[in-house]
Image (cartoon, rainbow, N blue to C red):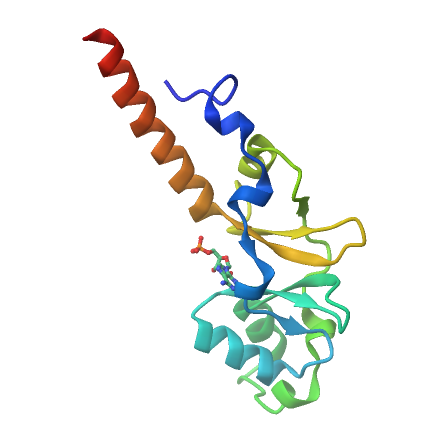
Length: 154
Ligand code: AMP
């Protein structure tokens, strides 16, 4: 049985699970769309956080945001990649977590999002929590609990 309460998972915090900001690819709101597209393509990610010059979280930009915005009636208007800025097309209403949030809050947050940004009290970006990390942790817990309950039966 997978149980969060009373098990090790319940004790974990977002801080212990997140990918810290130094390892996270990001763009700035004032960057042109072509720069953001380059970062997204080169990193292989479908979306990355958008920060301001002081590292505050502003939103998330995705490949589909960008493509939607350069799509004209008959063709992709690639010249818009240079004309528009990330802050004009990014998603601004994005969920976020605090480092002190518990595992369950992290788990719920990644149900609808492949990753969720983590911020401090000043809304400065400190990292991301990914669905992959959460699933890996749950899997590890299932195996550990399975091994422990087999030992207990012996
Ligand atoms: P994953 O669960 O590792 O597949 O990551 C899910 C999503 O989280 C990716 O598609 C990216 O949008 C984002 N992501 C994961 N790792 C990074 C990173 N190091 N830098 C920027 N974005 C990331």
